[in-house]
Image (tube, rainbow, N blue to C red; front, side, top):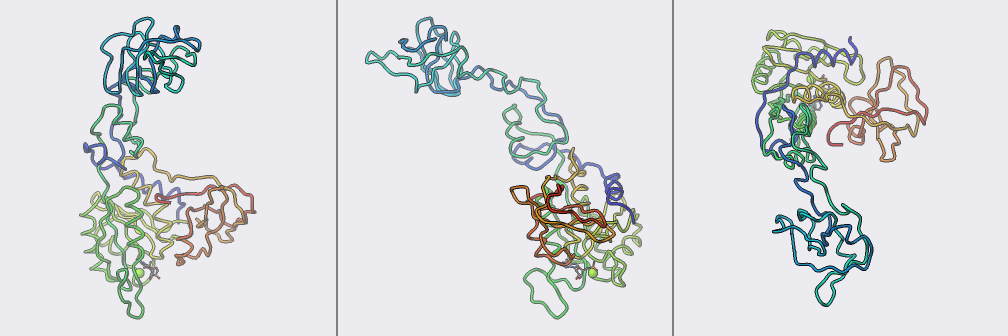
Length: 397
Ligand code: AMP
Ligand code: MG
């Protein structure tokens, strides 16, 4: 049995990022950059009014009570047709370029229009007040995004503002999900005695989809060697990474590992010293990769988070492969009397308080569905309330 860290290293080692494509900004949502992005323009592109009001020479409106004629106007998307002369002001709207000769904007609320149309300034202004400077956000040529960065809405908006319409990114990773077990029936199906609904396919399909993968769900692998071999062979040809759930242990009807080995697959490890999810394996065959998760729903969930999500991120070309974590504080004691480290389902409150999500056995879905994090509790450990803990998170919580 190997440690979790060792297992993760072995999973990540042979994985390379998937090929690079050019995608439009909105198509690139969730993808990771395969290039550094440098700005093609300055932002702002010109000295800009940040308020609706009047552009002035600040030295001429340093105190309240000044009255100036207004014969020039500039709106967003336009430029003034001449410079601002001494002794006048210009009507200006938010986002408009500052007319040459002006160096401040007095906001509209601090002004009044005289009966003769001139503008009275009820407040003084300092040089460059209410002006956004050219290049204040970034200059042309500045590296604004880096290789390996994941593209969410703010990053994509930045790329647009920096002048880009398309980005070089790693294409979506195709994850093939297969459940294993003769007892499994589709969600909603009427069950004969001994049968259960397949929840793992739903869990894994949606987990990887929320992590940005394209998921292909294949028919359930039956508890039979040749059929499992055929199912694995076809799954391998469909995607970048195959994830199975069930049939991975040492029971008489657990055919995943024998099928993999009969196909000629390498078995990198089998069994990791964690709870839940000890019988998890990783293998490589003809450049394809398989992570065999245990069948118990919570074991499948925890091992998918601990092993398969980092693998997915590596394939996606992400600079970050680790899981996001939040530090919280136990509001009640948490203990692991066992001899393996236990990744326990917890509820992390917005206040930062952390407590167990309920019964921790690997077949209990209710506590899994209540949880929004996992805490890695070492063997033979009793943590009192008040202990600071690191809560591992997954996409979509
Ligand atoms: P296995 O790893 O195949 O021995 O399965 C362990 C336990 O998980 C058994 O009780 C299975 O019935 C259950 N199980 C396996 N696959 C699934 C699945 N896709 N959905 C729900 N339960 C499952
Ligand atoms: Mg089974």
